Length: 152
Image (cartoon, rainbow, N blue to C red):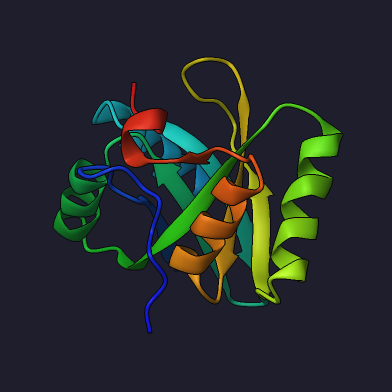
């Protein structure tokens, strides 16, 4: 039986891009500058590198525009829905991780938001079960952000 989501009707999940790029000097800057030239704002960024390649994880304010641009420019990328928990203090981070471990939800990786309207921070979470995690976090008093919450 699927978990009932507590997200309000019409609220869209946050989408993350994983852009595959050559691991060379300036490549991240190139991508950031290209997105900025299209008025696409980066709300969170994280990189993972290997010897030959890098994965640049991005959350932007309007994912549809970024998706179209990345396709047009021939970038190889994937998109995933992620959970973004609003945090204000270190105590909030503990609250997030405790709620998820109690529900036995595996965290694949996390990274912080750079900025978002309203000034509070966000913690980007890639999880094994986004719907259940969103419900658990909400029930634990943690605000789960939607696409509209991070848009400018």
